[in-house]
Length: 295
Image (cartoon, rainbow, N blue to C red; front, side, top):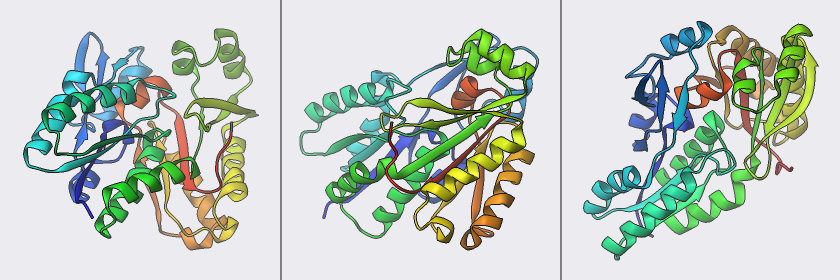
């Protein structure tokens, strides 16, 4: 059984204490706002409250993924310590970082031929990606080897469900995920689109729902339909939000009412600067393990 270091990207949207406590090195994406570029370092270089405030004032952040050189610089110190690596990336359905990580791993294997570097695509994002990383860390801590863990990820990554809505459509319009007309009509009609991530790791619009509170109820209904063991679900449940903590708490309270085993066990995270650049403020997302998600 071969020991390994579990690594991931900052876009798993967990807090810094999580990565420190679970001993998971992460590599940072980057974002640019108001002409300055910063690492996506979990709010250290640029606070999340300031970030979303600037978007509300009209700032339009852009993002860049980790490039091959950065990945090599990230991998090499671990390899120099004589350790193998399991790196799990943000979904290839929304970013090219998986390809960059694979290219860097190929270079590093040439330089360190006795070491293993396994790169896997999470097919997930934000704290759904984080939920998968958390589960992998549990297996690592239980002593499961690199190959066995990688096989588990490939078999189970599509059981991580992602459901989310946004009360502010401007960032989705700017990113080309919805049309300008749809954004305008959505704002006028108070529509909150309910979205998910499909089996290819891509964002998919599932329903157009009028009012935020109806969207919250529908999102929890999807958990009732898809979670392992239905209302008896007792696995991990993460919620993430972008400057919408009250809405996130409303989702949490409703889940605790419907899923009694989860009372007091739901974890709420903030959406980081890279994912938040594309969602803008007002997004709430729900993540849990369930059946295999489809198209």
